[in-house]
Every structure is written in structure tokens, then in C-alpha cells.
Image (cartoon, rainbow, N blue to C red; front, top):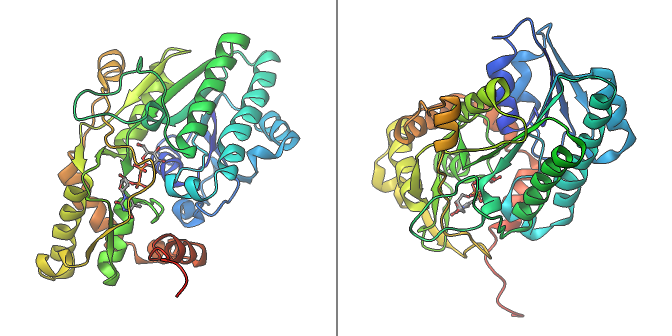
Length: 354
Ligand code: DAU
């Protein structure tokens, strides 16, 4: 099998490659990534010498080059991870999300359709998406595959658009596709703009731990390894045209997550838990902040036999250990772009002219 993995320098894509390149020496993996601010070549450094791995730098929003590369690689499977994914950045600047998430997905679908129309019957397009397309839940219920789309942020609106494109290319052109909508991922190699790595790195550095609002918003945490295992099962056994929700039964308030990180960090750093907790700061809330996400994963569990292996407590403890142990990776992630982002995003609000 020839796999084209888009966004393989990002968090979930690089974990997918780490799980599969060495484990499947008879398959080939072409990692196609635009090298945006969120890309980290260090995340796949250990794979660079593998004979069945190749990297191609490509901006999927760029147009005709996408066709050229897809034709040249001629993949059996396209796993489309590439996306701009940070909600706060989409609030500051929505336009690049349209390019990276909508235009890019369109270009890739068109290139896949061309390949498939030329007789490559086996081509499968798997689109990796998010539960944020469903909007916000109250304190009850969970998202199913039938929940209507109701995205809140520019980011989730562009992911919703990309999901619609993928379904349209299946219904209109017959392209074989599958879609997965996952809850919040965590684990090794995640960009430190996201809640869990941000808190780990800030706790270690003695910086503030910025909790939006009162920390009462709820996310449903899924270990990235469990997510990748779900994608592998969908590729193997998923039905074309079908959507699968993937979630780890891991609902926690943000404050619970941050406090659990404080506990683990205190143990790792030999500090008192109280001293790490003192770093918590309640900061201005995110505009349009979705209150709660929760996934009902019964379809993928019953149809494909998927079950998450990680409990949130074990997964978080191991994740904290990974970031503490992998200083070189963390140093590569805390680059100038990241420093500039944190300085502007977490700056205290201006209160008028002095
Ligand atoms: O649900 C899946 C989604 O999960 C993905 O589609 C997104 O790409 C991914 O970024 C994530 O979205 P969230 O907005 O939930 O993730 P984030 O890590 O930014 O924030 C998690 C929660 O923590 C959210 O309620 C906002 C809050 N938060 C976040 C940051 C960065 C804070 O309280 N403080 C912070 O500094």
C-alpha cells in the first residue's frame, strides 16, 4: 500500500507516522506538509532514514502542484490530517484557515478524483476532522454522527466546510471517502499552543498557567494513540461514505485537567503541589467559547471493534513524563513564532489611553 499522509509534521499526523512507518515496512508513506508554523520536523526525525518514508514539502492550497504530486505518488490511501487547528488563532486571523482547511481540501479532493477516475479503483480518501463542527453541548448528551452541524469558531466553520466538501465529492463524484470526527487529542508532540502542552511547559518554566474564564468548560480527552488506532481501523474496515465519531470517554473540566497537570508536574519536578498550583491565573475567556464537547463513540466501537486503551489519568501522567523527558523536542517547539504568539495572545487587555 502507498499512503499519502498530509500534515505529517503536525501533532496527530506525526504520531500516525511514528506508529506505522516502522511497523509496516512493506508499505510506503509519503509525508506531504506545507511546513507551516505548526510543523515540527523533529517529530519525524527518527523516520528520515527509513526506506519506506519520504517527505514532500507542498502547500495544498497552492493549486496545480497538488495534482502533480498526487499523480506522481499515486497513493492507494490519502490520510488528510493537514489543517490549521488552533481556535484562538482563527479568532485573530480567520483567512488563513479558509486557505489551509477549505481550499486545500478542495484541491486534494480534486487531485484524488482525477487519480481515481483514471482507473485507480482502490483509492481511499480519509478526512480527519473534529467534534467542534457540532458546536457546543449543555450539561447533558453527546455528539453522534447524526448531530446537526453548528460550528462556533472560524476554525470549526472551516472544518465543517471541509467535511461537507468530502461528503459532496463522495455523493456527486463517487470518490471513496471516510470521515472521522474526534474529540480533543493529547499526547506526545503536540504544539504547545494547546492546553495540555502549554500547561506542562509553563509549569516547568515557572510561568503563569492561564485558565480561560472559570475553567468550567468541558472537553472530552482522547489519547492520540487511541485516535490513530481508530483511523487505522477505519482505513482497514470502514465503509465508504461513512462518518465515525472518535472519543475517549474522557470528559473533564479545564480546571480538572490543569490541576491534574499540577499534581503530575509537582511529582516530576520534586516540588510541592501547592507551589505549582499557585501558578494558575484566571484570564479573559475565549470569545464564543464552546461550553462542552462529548463524543458518543458507539458506532466505531460496535461496527469496527475500536476501544480506547488509555484512561485519561494514565495517559496524562505518561504525557507529562514525555514532555519532561524530551527537552530537545520541547526546545524545538518553543520557537520565535510561539514566543511571539504567547506574548500577544496572553498580553493583559489594554484599558484605554494612559
Ligand atoms: O475538540 C477537538 C478540537 O480540540 C480540535 O478540533 C482543535 O483543533 C483543538 O485545538 C482542540 O480545540 P480546543 O479549543 O478545545 O483546544 P485548546 O487546547 O485550545 O483548548 C482546550 C480548552 O482549554 C478550551 O476550553 C480552552 C481552554 N484553554 C486553552 C488554552 C490554550 C485555556 O483555558 N487556557 C489556554 O491557555
